[in-house]
Each structure stands twice: as C-alpha cells, then as structure tokens.
Image (cartoon, rainbow, N blue to C red; front, side, top):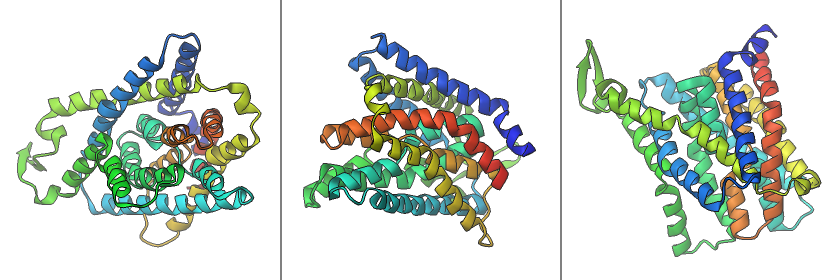
Length: 342
C-alpha cells in the first residue's frame, strides 16, 4: 500500500495528471467561448499529427538495443493484440441484441482508445523514455487495427483491390507510422550499422542523442509539444459535444465505463497471467504504461470514422466525452492497482 500511495503522490505523476486536466478544461472552455473555430482546430491537428507526434514516435526508439528490451517489445505487442481480441469479443456479447453493424461499432468503441493522442503523451510525462517506448510499441497493433479493421467495419468497405490499396495507403503513408517504423528499424539494426566512438563507447551513427545531440534535442523539444497540444485538442473536441446528450445516453455510459475502468482491468489480468510464465520480464513502469495506454478514452479516429460515414455518430461522440471524464477520475486508482498487484 505504501508503494501505491508513493506512486500516486509522485511529483511527475501529479504534474502529468494536473496538466492533463487543466489543458482539457482550457481547450473546452475556450471552445465554448468561441476562441477556437474549425480552422483553429484543424491547424492544431495538423501540427500535432504531422510534426509533433512523428517527432515523439521517432525519438522513442533512440535508445540502447538489448535482448531484454527486444523481447519485452514482442510481449507488449502480444498483450495488446490479445486484449483487443478479448474486448472485441466482450463488446459483441454485451450488445448481441443489436444488428450486425451497430453491434460491431459499439464493440470497436469499447476496445480502441486514444493511444496516440492521450496514452502516449501521458505515459511519456509520467514514465519518460520507458513510457514512450511502451506507447510506441502499442501503437503498432493499434494503428493496424484502426486503419484496417475499424475502417472496414465502420465504412462497410468491400475488400476489393482498390479498397485494399487505399487502406494500406492510410496505414503506411501516415507520418507517425513512417517515423515510428524508420526509428524502429534503426533501433533494431544498431549492431550492424556503422559505428562511431564517443568517450570510449561505440554507438551506431544513427544514435542521434550521442552523434548529433543538437538535432536530437531539437526533435525532443518538438516532441514535447505533443502533451499540451493533444490535451488542448481533446478539450476543444469535447467542446463540440452536447453534454446533456452524453450524460443521458445509456449505451454511451456502458461503453465509457468499460473503456475507462473495465478494459484496463482486463489488460491488467492478461499481463498478470502472462507474467506467470517463466522468462517474461516486464518492469512495473512498463506494466503501468501498458495499462494507462489501454485505458485511454475512445479513439478520436474511430469517432471521426463514425461521423464521416454517419454510423452511430452521436453515441461515438458521447463516449469520447464520458470516457475522457471517467479516465481523469480513475487514473489514480488504476496506478494504485498496478502498484498493489505487480
């Protein structure tokens, strides 16, 4: 219990949570006061998605490569995929009385949270490089599911040749994915890349934090924009939502409670069971980062799909609002649970 209290009273944790709440409230308030319009929101989104987040994704893999970290990354991907499949199954069971498309969309809303906009900036602020690495690794299966499975289900796209081509383009031509994959390849390839010696230690020429620190610091500074911009954007987005509709929607409450409270418990159980297997070794910070990323509010991209294709758009927007509020309230309890169990 002492470790749990110490964790949630940690200055980095408190600063991250208070900053998150303050920026979301600021964005929400300024939107309601008409300081932000659709053009302002688009500008912030562009800076975030095409500049700040790619820098965050790229710098996340500028670390030493060792066998343990590589194996841990593989397990994190496995945990993420397993948890997605479990949550999708639960979603279909919970809403089994609805017709196929509606049931599938509700299951998607229950399963996929904002790892990129919410989880990754938050775990970076709390757990530093460990949090960034975990968030980046989890982003790989997240984006594959997001731009393939979620897009196909919500848009009801038929798997024809042109549709597959457009889907793959959405996945692999995204600046965040490109930055993450390039950085990951350079990270994995460190042993075979040309080396330079700095202070009697040999490094890959692409270890920019060592070989060109001025460039690395520049990218890190831009990456640090992710936290304030993403939380401000979430607040602005919530400012567009009919709050009364959200609070009175039964389905939105069911989905949001699952997304922000039950889902992190499920992945916590999955991780706990896997950790019973000999040879699987994850640090407590890694486990906490995994669970926080998985507890993130309903994905903004999923909500965009729903709005664009007019599929459960109101329920989707309502769950974005409610799941964000619930997570802000329950994050301390999630961290405490991690500290008590792992």
